[in-house]
Image 1 (cartoon, helix red, strand yellow):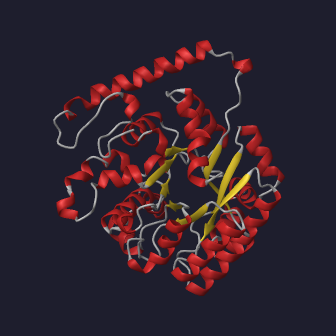
Image 2 (cartoon, helix red, strand yellow):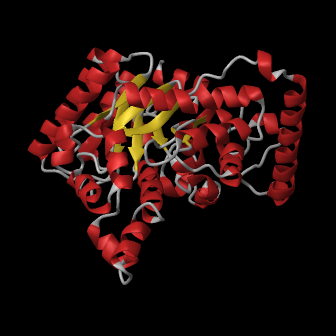
Image 3 (spheres, one colour):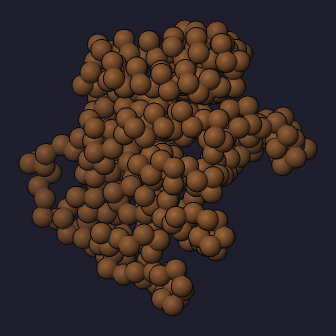
Length: 378
């Protein structure tokens, strides 16, 4: 067990208290922890005969698809890119729309057993309410059919019409109860409104009562933020800087912090959020956020506690060992889960990254499947 707000997992054998008395040795101790993990891994590899090793089950959690109606609506740009930019985008489009044999074959080649699928960004969050309700239903129907055909290979996070919270809660209830979905995906803000807004309470209350997580996927910041922070460059540079190059991740991190400071997890203490990209920069700032103490925030716990107790984290294409180790040391292995970000990133590379992580075999098993099985009731 770890004491909340004190840093690395208990297996690291050290504690970092918020008062800073023992924080001066963080770097040295962290380095020793990593070296010890590498030594332990090498010892296990020497003792283990690869020919008799049981294959490790793998469950990936940020894997994308596109439905026909989505491609005629908010995903129309993907079709335009396929038409204008040729083979690369055409292949991407084929991968997004295939929820059958070809996808499963690619999973098999990469060593992926289960994908928990979600509608690709930008999702339905920026649509008019009526359009969002219709598209969420269509895309969830499309996904439910794929899951029914291959229930041992696919799971699902439901798209939700967040602009209509009562209808979104009904959709989440229906999909988890009747179609074996594991939770929901929400692509960032809803036209500039964030999940700390009481407007979204029906959605959060539903997820809390069903004991299912919400995967918070990045979306570009609101346009005024893009204009203020990311403009003044070539159009493509601005788009990437506001998106996958930087802004997506900062936007998502801020969204989680807003949820914490807005008291979401005090109102819904069982609620679990999942974020990708090895924490969307949050682990790096985790201890710094506690400069805002509970006496200031009026929260029931330090901010770092919510990040260790109400948030789970996945890889989603961030196959970077130093970044992983920071997350591992800050939140512990039980909060980390595997994902590949297919088809935007390589499943084979994600699996290779998982296999070479400098952690024990038991820790890899937790990351590869056990943590997801526990959280998603798989």
